[in-house]
Image (cartoon, rainbow over all chains, first blue to last red; front, side, top):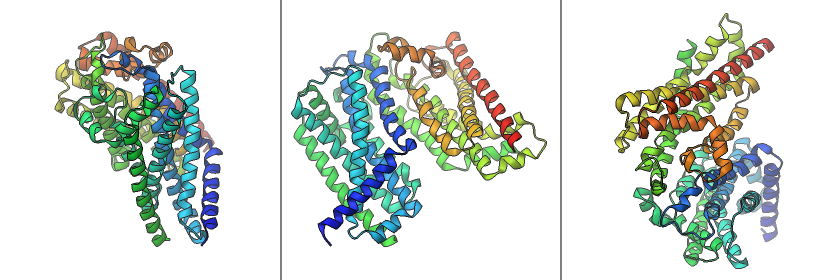
Length: 258
Length: 249
């Protein structure tokens, strides 16, 4: 079992998954459209919220919303790859893949690469729209590296989560089980206003939600004033680590079923 | 018979009923805590964002109706059930309305649930029980409007995938409206213009007026006119698509 066989499996799975995504309008359009809807709906429809006393984010509301939508697009790029894995199990492709792959860990790595490519495409679309819409970015090169590295880690964690679910349940009906937890963990964070302006149970949930740190760090990078960056990277890396273990468990279950 | 079949088929599918109740309530709950500070914007029409946002689940729940109605009709086409119906002397409008009965039943469950949950969590309806009744009626009309759109797409394309493909467009119509803030408080010009021409804004504002404003004749007339107008156009379009499909059969 060579390292080469691992990467050749990963490359093949990534290429196929990415090819399916980029050549199928039914997959590529919703992936780009949903985050765009959120971005336009929040940045356009809620911009007056930035005039609320206590809302102090210098780059403006468009950049504030971009910080969230960037993470959302990255996370859902990962989750939708989980859907693709479930579809491959339903169609019987994964069973054949399991039999053919010399290093099955390469299958997960391949889907991971494909998820990253999906996220890069979606993030590029949203970033272009945000810049056209007049988003202010005060952060420099290092800040932007931090911003997109965090997004990459979130994408990886979400993809590995979806992969773990898809490999355990092996059906497209597992879609809500992949989508709902990610949706909730993202939205139970300071999405529309800073943490201090949240109220009620949402504020309590945001206080213990690790995504809060990541979103705040993201917005800090855009503003050129990094806040809680070390904590955010630690949380994101820990999430990835936990999800690697979760996905590995899913792979073992799928191997037993194959 | 068709109506009974439609009701039973819709309510028997937890995957159709539960998300259409749960998702709007989750979003309402998150919005209420996440955007409560918006009530501090000068000119905001309510003291509590929960009361302002309580109108949203009624319309969001109706969005699921489009998907449910369309999927049911598309399944009947895909399985050949509609072809067999075409051999009977059934009138087209009766067939169409029968197919939509399940959506009306689902809309009623949604509306009653949202009113009850709203009252339980402390969102007062200023127009009282009579207002709550009008909310339910308007919500049913909104469900019918979206359900007819779903049925039209299904009859035109004959594909449940196409019905699912329309969902993002309806989702966009929902968000590009006065769903999050009143139109006069939307800063972005193009967004305010789109929201002004978007009938979904008036459906939401009609329901919202009964919760936070009182008996506002203009808001109610616009709400009923938009929901009724969309229903009428979609029913006519669906009936036409049904005629074409039956001719093909």
